[in-house]
Length: 430
Image 1 (tube, rainbow, N blue to C red):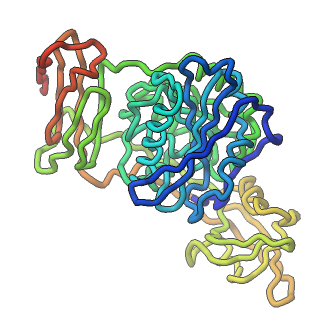
Image 2 (image 1 turned 180 degrees about the vertical axis):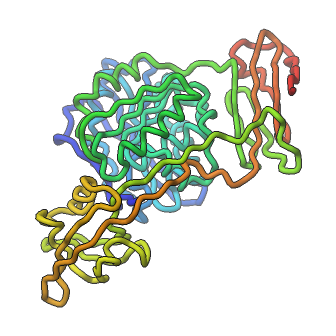
Image 3 (image 1 turned 135 degrees about the vertical axis):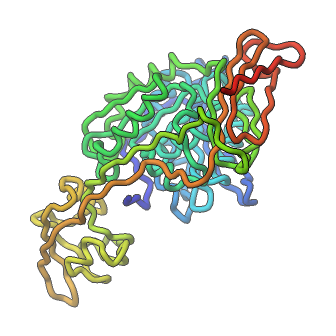
């Protein structure tokens, strides 16, 4: 999948916020310091604990950090929601080596949330994770690997496939444990076509009945935010973190994990899979996206310079395009901005015909051909043995069944109903 290497942001200028911004530094697990910005809502609504809205930015694979994080935060279209609902907003900043899909970046986000809770009056039951593009994909990743602290998840133009493809951990939709989702994907997204996104959302809905999916018109930009603001505000206003009386958790990681009151030691790969522990449901999605297959490009005032191809079978290379060519037109469309190539391809489908013009050594060449063929892909990568555990609390009794789990422990201090003494654990494995 083509991923933008810039910060995607569309807004109508600086928001008319009346709150304030403050930049902090977080020392991450790789020893590097990275900034994060906190927006404080107006004083008149921040005297009591307020919700916290965490926003993960796009293009998190960039090697360089954003050079002006506070200016970036000041342009956020989410500030209007923050002012109206009295929310703090946390803006983490990731980069290659500290993304929303690796242990450094995800721990950075969790540590920054903890730091904000200490520094500001945050309502711990109303912490929401949101993000756009790579950030939206990061929301999917954290919703299935570290969902516990969050009241809900807001996915803006994200991709579950990207979360699975880039994530260190394998993903299982059941791990969302009925936590609420507000998912927005646009009808003409040039990176994540709606026909590929909808099957993944449908799969999530099969195991989680707390999913709202909206499909406003638009491309891979947040220009729909003003018309969707009421929906987002209602989500933040009405949703709160609910204590879990029942937990489902599946993992292929050998690392200890905790979800609410259930601690899991990891996977026992030597144990057989229990009869009730069926293979995690996966789906095939047909990729009919038209792709020129350019891995690196350089935009100039004269066109797009081709730097590198994704592979030897890339559409443009098969048509005769060479590295160093300057792409100037796509059929009748001039290449006059950095998004022109993707905007053009978003109107096409795999196998469609196309023509383009390139300048090579001072000469203009017209090249014709067809886009790449479509192909099916699996939504999730599940290559390792997984463990699964299901637990529910009824009074002081905890019913558990597990498969390939190395060990587990019930934390009575975190159960929805406080259990005095050691809880009675009843195994109900078939």
